[in-house]
Length: 253
Image 1 (cartoon, helix red, strand yellow):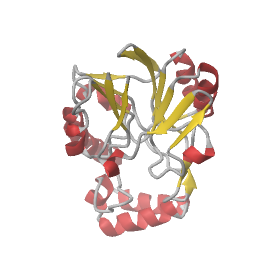
Image 2 (cartoon, rainbow, N blue to C red; image 1 turned 90 degrees about the vertical axis):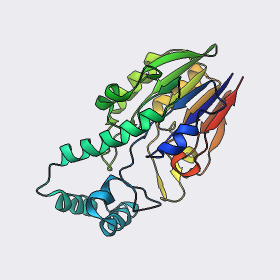
Image 3 (cartoon, rainbow, N blue to C red; image 1 turned 120 degrees about the vertical axis):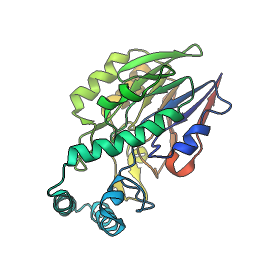
């Protein structure tokens, strides 16, 4: 059995079409939407609407953790515009292309920048969407937990720790624990380019210690200090920033 795993697709539809080649199944750990590419400020919904110069400024402010100033800039740019409707229209355009690129079968969960309410409209019969639920793939039980925890970034699918922990607990025993965000381990949460810690989950870390899955797979941290480490018997793996690598992580058994 061979399974390919991707995360943080961020608009890379052409590469996503090839991601399942040679695999029996594809797993996607979320963040399909590209709102603003921190490596190429000309890509994404934000520069399409407001131009590269404003995208440059937004990235500068967020990277410096000057979130109040970033919100002021954001509010000034959106003044007089239908923010919700404009973003939803742009996201729908991306989702139509990205979900069409998924091979059959695909097992997917949400990232923190995704909009879960829209997924049922685009997920075809070959795509199984899971969040706080399990699926058997090749005789192994895979558990999926989508979304992220609340941060100053205020991305679309951030939830409270209690709600997130309840989804983790609902999985029960699993062989492979799949999530968008990492467990709360500093080395796995630190982004070396952004020079900040992303939020990891204590509930995921507790599950790794008590359930002891063979693998814990995740993404979210684009340039992790440590992409892979062992906790007890569990191999914790950041499967990579697919928008950058264009290469899925593979597991075989």
